[in-house]
Length: 281
Ligand code: NAD
Image 1 (spheres, protein in one colour):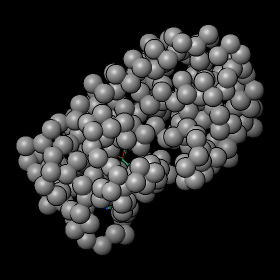
Image 2: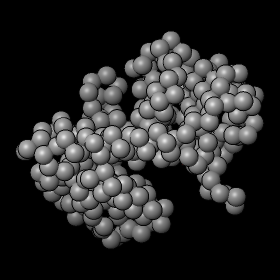
Image 3: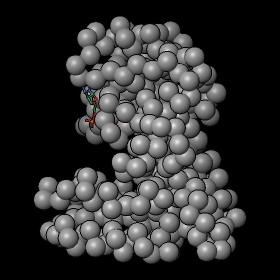
Image 4: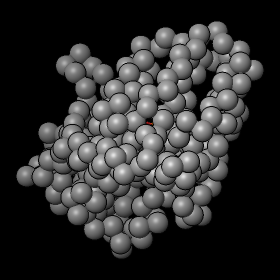
């Protein structure tokens, strides 16, 4: 049966490397997280990001704004952080309350400080294969595949999902690594048959248990990005118990991709500090 990919262990190693990177800088990088309102899930995510940022030796430059903040006031905060030399990375926690336009606010983040990799500039750099900060979750998937020495050049890779946050940048990253990439989405015909072609199958559909054993080629590497909170705890988009009997390697949920996202955020912040060449770096 399949190798269980230990995302917690790989994430721990990447956080330790980020901490070692911080130690080589003359001045600690500063990570500005911005939380708008009191969405409990977002509050937990931001708290974990801040905790691990401090653990890696970075400065926690958090801003918490009221849920009824105006777009003008939030834009002013982003502009101030963009100018501030103590700020290396800016992370605007999503989703924002519905009265705020996320796209135009994200656009105020300078690409050099875009540690979430979500600006148009970062997406364009990824699409064109130029240096830039990559979105954390797909970058984390790639780091997991590399940690387990999964061969990508020439491999058939299938990505299920085409969101701006996960699926689309995932496909671009795999393409840059010379995989033959197929992207599936809600209109794909015969999803199982397409997935069964994959040597590397990345599932980010947001549908619990969507991918079962019948969608997996024997020996394939299966990465489950989905996270769903159910009565018996967390589960993913992949039917883990069924798929582990067929796959060569598979990520569990929790303990697979989940811990990688914050680890890559820390890695991106170190990269941003080096590239910004902030005074003393
Ligand atoms: P999304 O809803 O924005 O996008 C889902 C994509 O899947 C869409 O492109 C849609 O076309 C496709 N899709 C939906 N149903 C499908 C089906 N039946 N067959 C084929 N394709 C289908 O979601 P997202 O933001 O990309 O997130 C996907 C999942 O990953 C969610 O469960 C989310 O919670 C999780 N997630 C996890 C992390 C992490 O850190 N591990 C980070 C981001 C998202």
